[in-house]
Length: 180
Image (cartoon, rainbow, N blue to C red; front, side, top):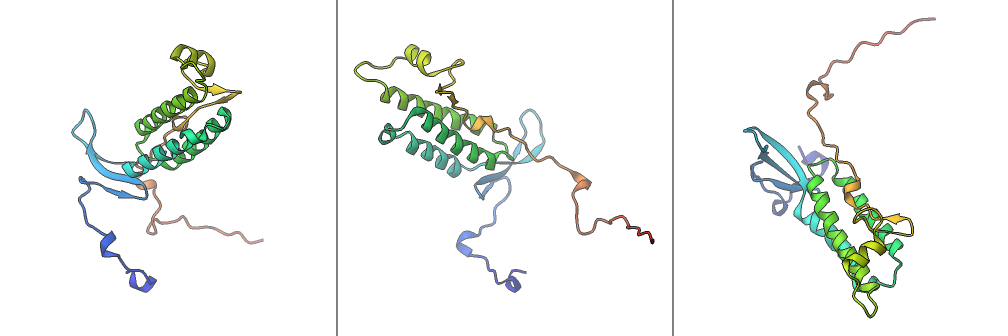
């Protein structure tokens, strides 16, 4: 089937696994698991560990100490763009808990970046940090720019559509033409 298209399988990149074991494909881990509270099994697609680590490394690079020359609102905007773009790619899987974990990591890195940049002679304590850099609760904001992170992207999983999925064998209604 692949030969007429000029394609071939690379043995070092190809392996056969059971769906219960799971496999990584295009940044997703695809695996069958039992749904909590039931005895039914479903196939879940989640962001792979490698993809999660990659976005955490990107956050780490943006909040590294060599970037403290930036303004805080520029950093927040840059982090929001990166996290929102990453989350938009993974929003069609089971990703809500992963988005929260990535946001938690980013929030802690951002908090440490702010604390170290604005520390001066005195350490910036948590009450001072909250009063100075948070607008609602613990949401970090500066000059009207708010840190939203990956959780701002809504997760919309694919649902089973049964007979509504179009196939080449689905009959199409006959079209009628009218003469003038």
